[in-house]
Length: 216
Image (cartoon, rainbow, N blue to C red; front, top):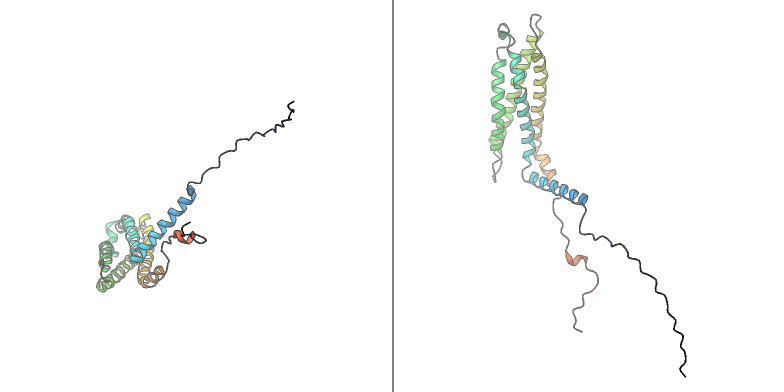
């Protein structure tokens, strides 16, 4: 007679589906943006290491652009009426000289640093002489216009008053341009000390333990 065997059936709990863990495919957008900005700054620093004189050139270029923007105002200030031209005999020629030298000083600056050659001392000295001549012409214009404005019978216009302030700002920018150019050897050495090397991680540096190269 066959014995009845009790079969115990265990209930298997249902496995709930778990949400898939998102796969990290790479850096986030914020990390990519930060890395892009860092790389852009590194490239600009490398460019400055090669041509640190571009800093002085940029300041001088801004000074020239500023003068070209104010030229219309200070030119109108010279000619309020014909009777007053006798009191400012050199103002017109000074503006002509300033305009001419403001363009030539940029050309001389570029010639002072030829590509793959040593700096040209002649053009470097010429740049400083041109800046000095521009400052002198600014001072002559400022003094003559100031004397004209101080006269009781002068019809002082808005351009005449604004021109005095604009010329002072131009003199300050010229002084700043000369100072930045004179300090070129100082900050060029400081820029060269900035570390711009790209560090690459080696695959072997991230491996831990010994590698088994023996056959089974």
